[in-house]
Length: 280
Image 1 (cartoon, rainbow, N blue to C red):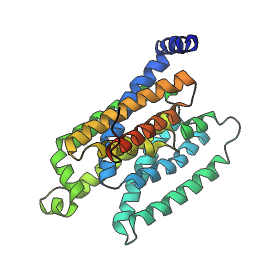
Image 2: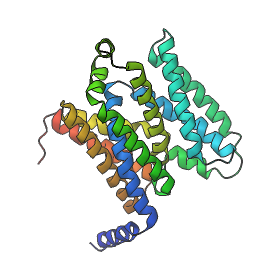
Image 3: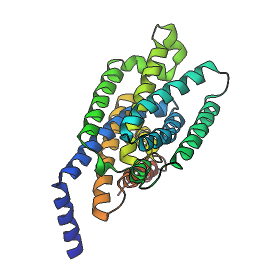
Image 4: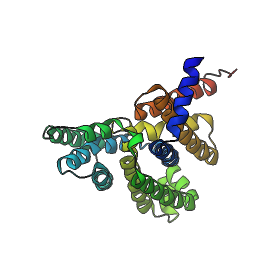
């Protein structure tokens, strides 16, 4: 009992610290972004795409460290260009999209690993980006996340019916005059920037889970699109907060803690809804 009270007191003390408050605000914003974009990622089978962008971001991280530039400022343009170029390659070749993604992912990852070998001395910045540290986010990260959230929400929600049709049947959307290519590339830009921003929270190695797991959990719970969207956003933000609190309470890494909470929630939801296990 005493240990439990002490842990709670320590957590309350942590919540009064500015870096912890920034982390919670960032978790909410990133959770909403991840839940919103993740819905379309899962329905459009883009999970491997976001996985490729996230892992290829190692090149941007390594370049940032080598050039002594804030990795965030290097990640944003790199992931943006990488995502657009990959989508262009997929559109212009006869190869399957997963083949293109495997090729560019392997090449970019190889370049990133080679670049990291040239990094001398302290590699703290590199490690924090690889494995994530949401407790280290600053006001600039919060502003960037908020801007991305506003732009993404305005774009997707203002064209929601068209986005749904594009997701379900791109050919019909094209016939009805919807600018399919413009919407596809715009979404890839948003997705690439979301990956770049979320990397600081959960790291290169886990960023894809941050986008996919909340939306997949919501998809198990409902097939109605509007409820699916809302539940994905709620799951993304709440699991992020719980993950941060758990990491602070048990002194664990923040990025893996967030993804672990999301994974546990997915398992529980899957068990309750698909295996017909009634919660007590």
